[in-house]
Image (cartoon, rainbow, N blue to C red):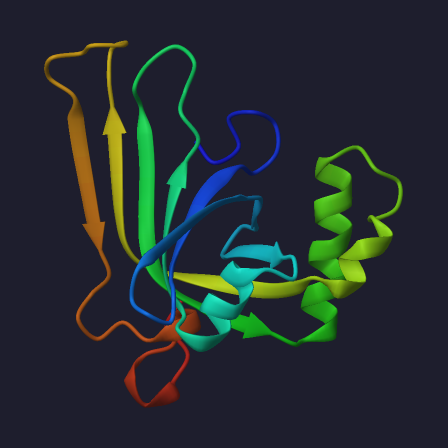
Length: 154
């Protein structure tokens, strides 16, 4: 549902320094194993650097009331290889031969997923939507690692 319009689109909720919520549109980038986003210089970027808690909600669907919501913690990524790979993916998803020049001022964040809610409906006004909830195991540790830092088994 994050890519229902051809590129990743979602609403990102962060927490301001005073504890109040902040919501902005953003463009997530999905890989086979992770969720990322390039975040432009903005208050939401300051929020994620200060307090990585986030919630992400898909854009509304045209033909129904399906929804996808997830939450967890974001982490700034400084790995140049990951940044280069995702910069290329970001541009390709938008049909661009080169990434936009301003991407140099953006920061890459990974978004760990602690819980997910998927809602499926039969159309607008569905009286019985189907909700599926997933929560990370209690011992969940960032980036697919088990407690103690050991890699998670394949």
